[in-house]
Length: 348
Image 1 (cartoon, rainbow, N blue to C red):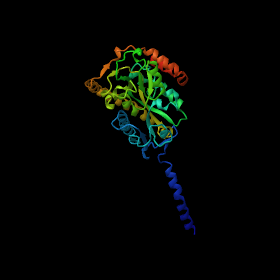
Image 2: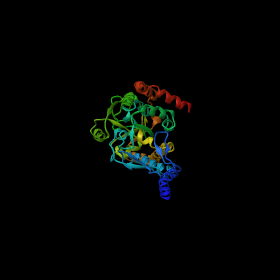
Image 3: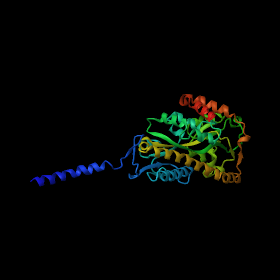
Image 4: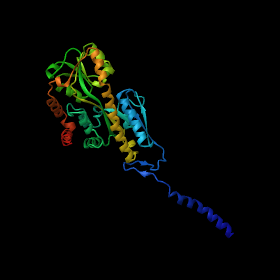
């Protein structure tokens, strides 16, 4: 009887000993942002769905594909990016990312001002003297990006990266433009956004907000006299075949913001969050480089069709007046961020 009791006790001890052994196994490390990550790499990878309404061959496609490659390589497969082009996952609105249908999506920053009115400052006219200034302000480590993400707190998304399609330039059908006086009375199509409309008004034209689908017909039928457009997109959209003049005003940056669902962000370790941010910096440089490579080819195609390109040094727009006039109209939305950007650029 004593032997049977001893054997039974030994059997009962086995689960206890096994559990004691479990205490030495690797544990999931708590993420300071609220998520967890398996530091031994044994867990399932985190899959992030990236929604984009643009095509894979577009500048947005260059960003998405480069971003995916860099993130997956540098996280050693801990984070996988699935790209969905052509609006196949969500439409061109931020709600799909807020609700988590998409983990990531890109939008013109002025399209998201309902969530954060201050975002429109990133497309303010003549605020950035160079692409380097724009990249400096929108670097993930800049105090401006920190400030904008503070403003986005509670919206369900955060701004993780940006990339530029290039500055808006003027394209006109019937006459050259060199100054505000030349634009007086001209109807110029703009992106349906307050910052673009106020800029065009300050430049002397009558802004006509219009979606892209209406632009070509409106130009051909003389409903509008011209349009704003980044240089990089003129040939791709066929505008060089119907417009006569390209005026290199460079008045507004055309900036896409890459937004991530806040819950998806919190799932990432701090290390992987930093990898995503740095991948965004390098992916936007890839977009910039692709524009630079194709610029000479685009110019040749435009000139072949008889388009006249009027360079920036031929223009006499009062850029400081335009910048200040527009900034005054956005004082309530921007608060002191405008001056903060000016000070940051001057200090650095």
